[in-house]
Amino acid sequence: MRVKSNFYYTQLPGAKPKELYYEILRGIKDHKNTARIQKADLTQEEVRQVLHAVEYDYPEFFYVRLFGDGCSTTRYGNKDLEVEFQYRFPSQEQKKRIQENREFIRYILSHLPKEAKRSQYAAALWIHDTLIRNIRYDNHAFETGSEESPDAYTILGGASGKTAVCAGISKLYQMLCEYEGIWCIYVSGKNRKASKPEEDAEEGRHAWNMIRIDGQFAYVDVTWDLQEDEKEMPLSHAYFGMSDEQCGRRHKIEPRYPDIRLPRCQENNPLNYYIREKAFIRSFRQLERYVQKVVREKRRKFSFQMDPQGMDHSILRSRLEAWMKTYFTQEAKEISEWSWRYNEAMMVFDYVLRYK
Image 1 (cartoon, one colour):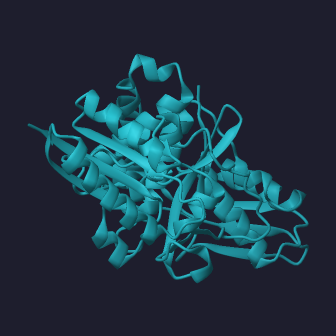
Image 2: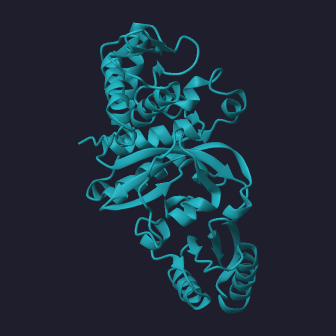
C-alpha cells in the first residue's frame, strides 16, 4: 500500500499556500497548464515555496516543469493569482512514459524478497542496495545541468537510463519506498568537503532522503553509497540510517524555503545499518571480538563503523589501520592477504580477506 506523506505541504505557512498547492495538483491531474486561486496575496517567494513543495512531495511528476521558460505567475487586480506550468512531453508520449515508469516500479518491487516484505527496514535497505547495484552517477548531467540533461534530475534517469544525479536518485528512492508503504521524503541542501561541520567547506547543491520506520527517523544518501569498486568490496552502507550528527558531517540541510522543521534523527539511531548489524564499534576491545568472530566464521568480506567519541577522525583512522595490520600479521595466521576501503568522515571501514 502506497504511503504519501505530503510532508512539504504540511510545512507550508498558511491556508492560501496550501490551497495553491492543491490547485496545482488538480491542474496536473486534469492536464491543465494553470492553477488559479482567489484573493491570494502571496509573494513570489511564497509561490516558489509551493512549487518546491509539489516537486519534493511528488517525484512521479517527472513530466511537469514547474520552473524555467514558460512557467510564470500572474496577479490580477482582484488579488486572484494564477500559476502557469509546462509539460515536458506531448500528450501521447507523456502517457507512454508514465506507463513505462509504473511498469518499471512494479518490476523492481516484484523482486523484493518475501522476507524483506515482512519488515519495512529490510525493504528500505533492499531498495537502497538494489539502486546502488544498478545505477551509476551521471557526471555529464552534473556538469551540463538540468536544462541539457533533464531526465537525470528526475526518476527517469535511474528508471530508464540507469544513470542519474543525486536529485534523480533520491526521487527514485523516495518513490520506491512510498510504493512499498515506507514513509520517505526528499531532502535538499549542500554537501561538505570537510568532515568537521564547523569548517563549513561546501561544494554544491545535493539531495538525499529521510525515512521513518517504527516511529524512528533517519537519513539515507543512496548517491554517496555508490562505489565503483563494489564488486570487490562490500556494498557501502556508510550513509544508510544516519543520525543528525552523522548526517551533518558531510551534509548541510538547506531547504528551498525557510522555517521548515525536519524531524529529529536521534543519535545511536536504531535505523543505522551498522547498529542493526551489530557492527557499530565503540572500543578496540569490541573491535577485537568482532574481527575474531569474522575470522572464525571465515567471512571474506566485512564492514564496521567506528564511534569516534570525540576523537579526531584522521588520528582514529591511523590507529585503527595500525591495529588491523598488527592483528592480521601477528594474530590471524589464517589470513594471507587483505584489502580495505575507508570513509573517514563516517568512520566506516570495509575489508576483503583472503585465507590461506
